Image 1 (tube, each protein chain N blue to C red):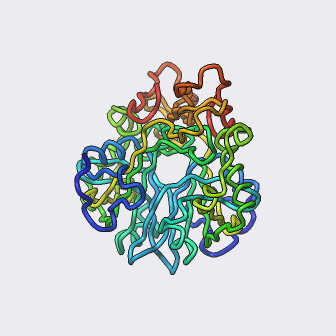
Image 2: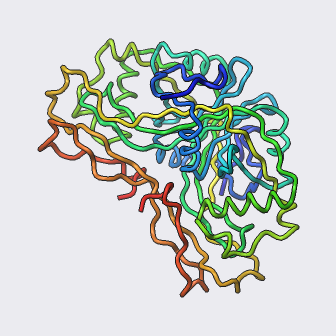
Image 3: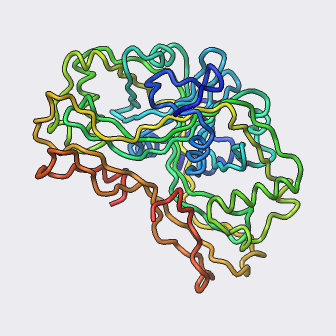
Length: 215
Length: 215
């Protein structure tokens, strides 16, 4: 069962029966993501930008160039981060009852920069391993200059909410006789065969994250 | 070549060579999406929420319950909408040069409600056909009460920018001898076999949107 929302702004107001506030549910949805969307205010506008993300412990991490404007903006005011996985098309017998299955998380809070170079190296290695398990041990680690040129930011997952729809069609009883296929078409992000760079012949294909990509 | 950004806030500042401002590029990325993320300000916070979307002409459409708070909020101030497709893992020989291939669009502007019931029916049918081509003719159309209970909002795509990375690994010359597989792992959203509801036996499987889902 869902725990209580950690703050008023994380309370699921629309279809609250789909809301979850426990950390295990939130962490699992975050771990299934390679990218997130960040909403923030700057220069009189609200912005929404996609970026890569990964989790270590109770924080969501992002990275960017250390000279980008985004780092300063995100550490200067609260933002909202959205992760959404589209898991299925719910095809009903009436147009109105069509739906989608999904898992989403919305996080509120303020990013802080990770300044310690050793900590940055550790969480950046975790990022490489998030994308391809075990890969951080196979590639050249970041040099001191590369670490210095990379901004790493983290956001606490303490103020977050998840929303899940993962069931079948909810047709009205009067519509059950309509002669059309109804059901759920499951969707998954899937990997196609890797396109190797010249010089990669003979090396083992990269490991892929089983919790993110369909086999 | 990219046209000029339509406004200062749509100008791609980070890696501008990845920016595109022509409508055809923007429309193609929007058409490949089933969901978007909307950033908006309300109650002293910035929020980021996912929702289903589709395009008709030069507008992006979303829908929701006509009594939801979101409708009033979105028509009362400017927002930003993000669509992001993750197209590939770019696996380099150094941790630093890892990247991702993607197509994204960010739109700025203010949603307006579609009030005319006939226009609402038309764009809602387009939504059903976006999810499953031809399906709007097979299912029960929305009743007047269902149309009245559904808020349909549209956002002009005139103030929008696209960003695309769709190429291979950019390793440093010094790293080319590192003994590890390097290349791109293409990613696609894919459909698994449909899970039919009871009573669907014998009906044709639904058509799926070829521009969105891998075959």
